[in-house]
Length: 280
Image 1 (tube, rainbow, N blue to C red):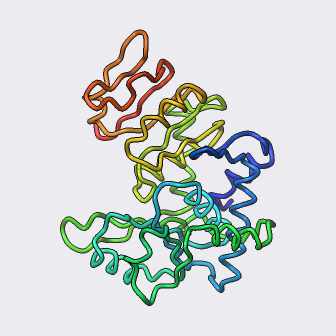
Image 2 (image 1 turned 90 degrees about the vertical axis):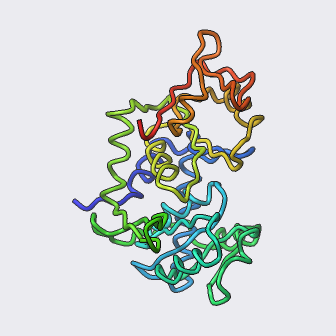
Image 3 (image 1 turned 30 degrees about the horizontal axis):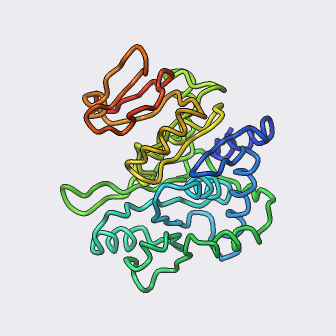
């Protein structure tokens, strides 16, 4: 049977529609709300003339729209292209010329860096209105297990950046890894602080989605007040980090984890936190 990434969201929207799925800033989306928004976005993209196999780029800071878009692309047979907003104009031009996206979703602050010929929709209030006008019925475009749903570009350290196609089947294993290897469950509350244009961020973000109550996205790289608020109210459990954090952070009996080197979490109660480090 063919696997589609959106099946994961469809299942939880059916079984636990009102359960919290994604938190960012002051807002929390339920599984049902994310399912509705992603269906609306999928239909809005199809109404613009995009067809199965087309790319949709996004250049933005971490926000719920990344999850809306990846599930929208899965439902519409499209391919999501997250773009590193730190790229130079030349590097950005190279990636977009190679990938040839049919549409670019962009934060206002990054729009000026895009090629003049690019078809762009700004991620502002106009975007919300545009998406909300579309039908909330899941388009359910047929896809094959091996069809790509995500396109990520390498850093280009040995030449020009190269695109890596990631299929529905590839990403379908994230839920199995989350359950069987990392022990994620219905009570897990996962912090997704890595950039969602990177496999470390979006990959862990997709791992954090199956069977968990809340996924938290950080927009700023040093959001100390937000971390403290989440730790005090959401009781974070796992989060993904680089090995450097294991050098900075020290376990204690009373607080769980503290970060004396950067003062990032000076008073947050982290007894429940279990960090997962990459590269060790």
